Amino acid sequence: MKNGLLIFLLIFWQLSSTAQTIQNISISPTFPGPTDSVKVIVDLVFTSGSCDLQFENHTVSNDSIKINLFHCPGALTVICNTTDSINLGLLPPGTYYTEVTVHTSSWSSPDPCSVFNPIDSGEIQVTILPGSEISEFPTGKAFIYFDLKSQDLVLEGNFNSVKQITLYNSFGQIVLKREFDHSNRISVPELSKGIYLYQLKSSDKKIVSGKILVKD
Image (tube, rainbow, N blue to C red; front, side, top):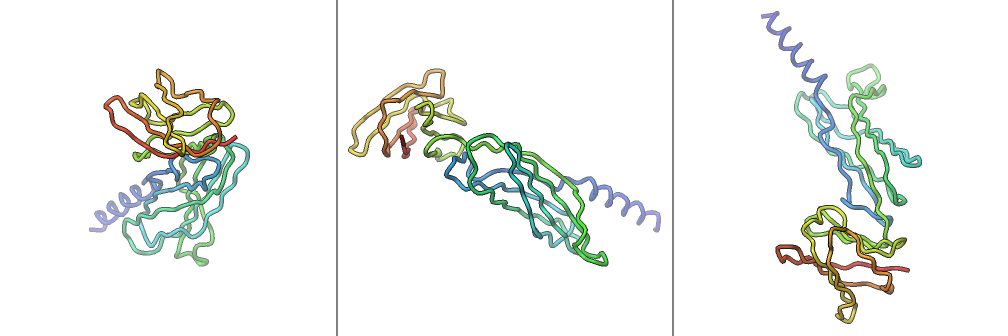
């Protein structure tokens, strides 16, 4: 009986010590621009609970972001799922290499939850897009924005099925109608600043519409 218990405890320890704590890392909004407050969302699982976030810290240096998450799971032997949301705020356009490290401490130590050790880490690339404003598709898998520097309308993400774009001004007049032909960019230097309604037509004749802001 003792041998069986020992084997069970050994297997449980092995599973607990090798289990992956970080389940998923994502960002919100999906396609952030320079006027969006960016959040990094981290889905976690622990083998004991409660497992709520104790505290976090993060640093942004040039094109590098480091996030540290600190948890002190309790005594309850359960699968404890939790999600941490880290608010990075506004970031300049660019691509940031982002590393997330999870630290845990023991609740039962003489000084509970005082000494933290890293147990898992993960990475995600955070890209802040240029442009005056970003309008997401309803699917959240693609977006369109106006690139101030190049004076282009730019489609990014899952845009392969988009074949045509039509822009309307505030009076409902068509100011632009172009085909996307093997490129995700359309040069539109003639557009004046203002809010436009766009319609995107796909190869299967589906239409997606929204608003986009063009600035000088």
